[in-house]
Length: 85
Image 1 (tube, helix red, strand yellow):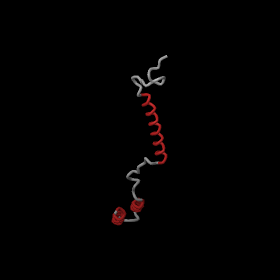
Image 2: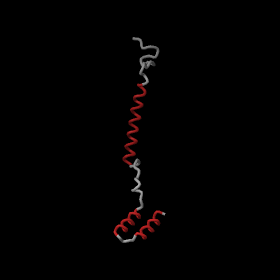
Image 3: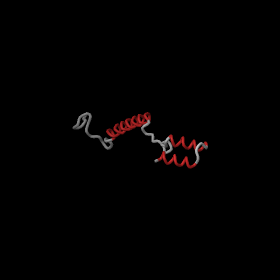
Image 4: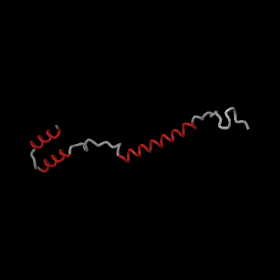
């Protein structure tokens, strides 16, 4: 048996020899990416609060008081300006 000048493991990869390197590399990149995404999801790093969730709880209380009729419109608008700056 003759294995060529490079021995049994050979240096001639043939037409698609680069795939022997590329396929495992791609596999491990996908595994690592999946692990990172799972960790980020589990820790809640990927979540962005919506615009409504960033509102001040003080503004919510103010709107509730106005809706119940505890304060009038002028008082509501003044307090809202104070809260929002």
